[in-house]
Length: 294
Image (cartoon, rainbow, N blue to C red; front, side, top):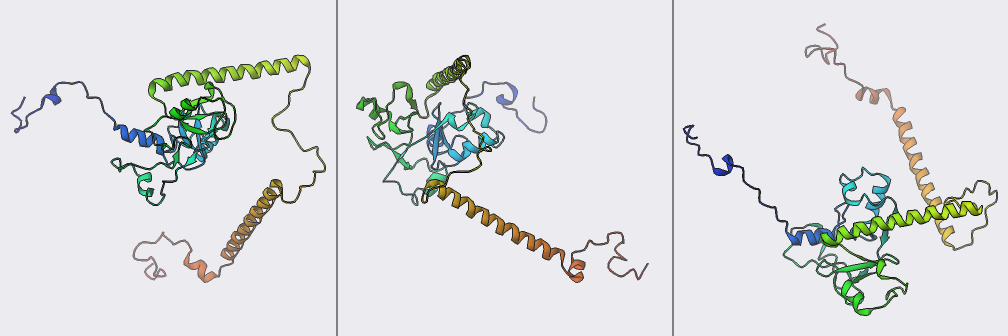
């Protein structure tokens, strides 16, 4: 060792030592879990949905993942249990009156301001506690209403205080649970899915034995020759108007593109000569000189 120009090896270079456990800043984990989408890593923006494991997502990110499993690189590790929109619940979140979007714009888009108290956009409608990870929050999978866990325990009711829908203790899901709770919730979620699958199978078998035809989820409407009239001012009419407007816009855009393509094809010979392919067969002596040295 040594005698090689003055280099002195250190102990860590000679002897393998046990690597120190990397400690992650708990504030960083809290901000990432409560202010950012678990799938897209983008700031949470309404509409916000939650899965059976209590993770928060942007609804558009979940829809994109369902349509394309490769849209996000680590999607299978994060939300492989989500196979359809029915596996998530849209949350009914109470807005925070103290939230200033302009003031918190910088803090909500970067994680570098952990020393500051980042304001949450949402609060518990009962206790007015902010939904920022410092207090445990739960949601009801029957209606999506969100509360602080302590508030729900103190009320002791079997009806949602926001919308009035009945619920049981099995419908209460913890948001961003601890690791021990997460393992337990994974087991419960698997049991729920297995139970629902068995119930569907038993229902189909019972209907088959009784001779009752099973209703299809999507009914074919090709045999309907005449459609009923749509009432004026109804949501269906508004949707139809929106579709017709979108079709008109798309038709106008395609027409403009066709005209541009037509004008491009009808360009004069002078313009075509400017954008024509260059003759690269000649060398630097004859290139662009009308072959006067050839």
